[in-house]
Image 1 (cartoon, rainbow, N blue to C red):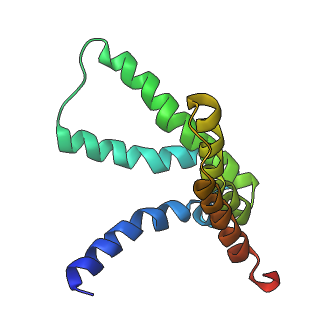
Image 2 (image 1 turned 180 degrees about the vertical axis):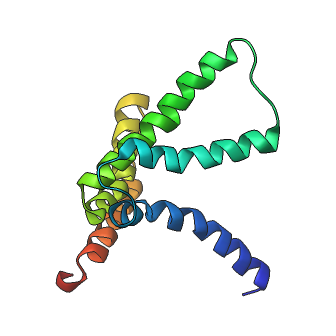
Image 3 (image 1 turned 90 degrees about the vertical axis):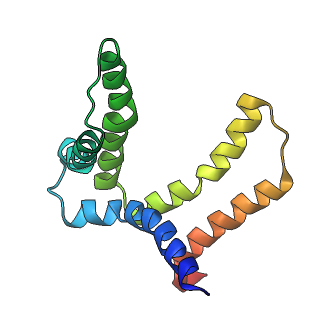
Length: 140
């Protein structure tokens, strides 16, 4: 495999690895039961870097829009994420995240009226089975 492909592969794998470390880092390195602090530690540096990079400020009604979107998309989401990370084991979180494709399949059928695709359902099942085998390798 050429080195350019390896570089792209490594860059592609970086985001899931960092995202997957959330539960381990939260349970081992962060102070106990402080989801607001953990959310701030996770979001604030990125926000400051973006502000320094763009060197622009908001004007007019964009302040309110940015506060609402930031609260819902980042603040509330990260707080809920870290609250869950403090309360459930990482293996359960992995299983819940693996079930996301099942929820998308079911909700798209109900909400968007898309046709049920047996191939997609089988892929969802295989993905869930793979996560279960990773979580409990002694019994698989």
